Every structure is written in structure tokens, then in C-alpha cells.
Image 1 (tube, rainbow, N blue to C red):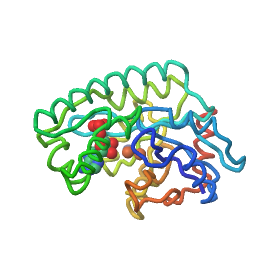
Image 2: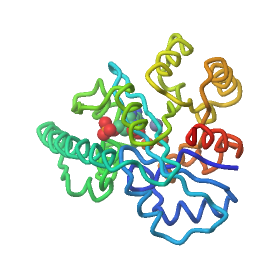
Image 3: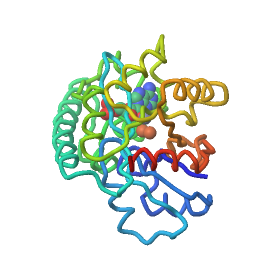
Image 4: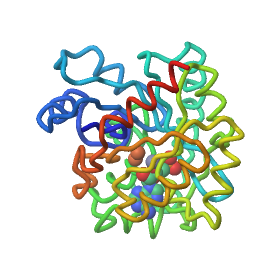
Length: 273
Ligand code: AMP
Ligand code: FE
Ligand code: ZN
Ligand code: FE
């Protein structure tokens, strides 16, 4: 079994890279991709740690994109272990944009009367601080009963505290991943609630998409089967993972998407073409 979608506390997960490796080992996984949102720091940290030879650690990332009011996610996998240096330069630029937006978000929340301090939020979110970390601090301070409530009443796209930030289109993200030596897979398509999934994926394939995430904790049984059929029809590869986030998503355990090893083997074949 493998898991090609997992987060550390370098984005919005709660496990450190070391804890995640330890958990992957305990679950008996053969491969684990660390796919933090928009940064490689959790992967870099994991790479520096001793890990069992039975576990293949894959360099991954989950890039937040923009499509109208939706925020599709693109998974990038760098099976050689490292993307080309331009990829990290691109991420650094995006990180600066995010910091700027977080300063504006802090300002907006203060104007709305919330006593919130970006330093405290960044202590949780580190290099990938975002709304989930603002939500956690607001809950800890007693403003809201839950993270969900914080999003519904304050931080969500339609709520008064929403502050937008820039994100690339899926086409741009696919191009960056490809140009820097990676494999691009559309993450959890179910969340996009698309009217015509096949047409959408056909379009992305024309942009260079390699694969689609078929196995995912949000896509049980028949939904996964539907994506599998579409992928086969369009000659797209498939990927899969739990989207493990640790304690913030307690129902999703590492390895719970039951992804078999052939998925990785198929992706590796494409990567080596
Ligand atoms: P940001 O990049 O700072 O705009 O935050 C986006 C992140 O917020 C997404 O990756 C989601 O994990 C999280 N998020 C968005 N909407 C919700 C929600 N309603 N409840 C919990 N988390 C959410
Ligand atoms: Fe996340
Ligand atoms: Zn995602
Ligand atoms: Fe994810």
C-alpha cells in the first residue's frame, strides 16, 4: 500500500515530518508522498531525517490554483527527488504574495474587532500560514466554537473577513510542474462539483495534465470508479492518497485510501518516458 497525498505541519497538517514518517512506517506503507500546500519545506525536513529503507519517500506538492470562485488543487510529483531550481524560485514568489495577503487579513480582522496577532497565527502555520491557522487561533481565543464556524461566519469566501489572494490557473501550475520535471495530477476532482467532468479533464489533458487523483478519502466507492473510467478513457494516469491532515481531520487516517503499488509504478513509467 502507498499514500501519495499527505500533509505535515509545514502546511495545514498537525504531524511533524518525523511523526508522519513514523506513522507511515507503522502503517507498513511502501511509499509516502508529502504533498504540503504550496511548499516543499516539510519534504525537505523529512528528507534530512533517517527513514526506513522499506519506505519510499516521494517529493510532492499540492498547488492551490484559482478557477473563478473555485480553488482547484494540483498535485505535483517529482520522482527524482527534486524539482528544477526554478520551481523553488516560483514558490518563493508565491510565498511573498501569501505573506502580504496575511498581513491584510490580520488588518481586516482587527478592523472587525477581533484581537488577533499574525505572529501567533504564523507560529502555527509557519511557511504556509493561511485561513485554517487564523481559524484555529480564533477558536482558541473563544470567538468561535469550531473551525467550521469560523469559516462560515468570518473567513469563508462569502463572509465579511474574506481577503482574496492571487493564485495561478491550473494551466499555469501544470506548465510549471511539467517544465520543472514533475508529474501533474488533478487533486480530488469531486470537490470541484463540475457539470461535465470528462470534458473538463479532456481540456486539462490538452494543457499537459498527466494524471487524476482517483483514490481519495472524499471519493469513496462509485465516485472513485467513475474517475477511474474517465481517466482510462482519456488516457490519463491515476494517483491516489488519503489527504491526511492529522488531528484537524481525525476521520482521515494515513493510508485510508488503500492505494495499491501499481499506481506508483504506472506514474514512474510516465515520469521516465
Ligand atoms: P487560504 O489559502 O489561506 O485562503 O486557505 C485555504 C484553505 O482553507 C484551504 O486549503 C482549506 O483547507 C481551508 N478551508 C477553506 N474553506 C474551509 C472551510 N469551510 N472549513 C475548513 N477549512 C476550510
Ligand atoms: Fe489542506
Ligand atoms: Zn487539496
Ligand atoms: Fe491535500
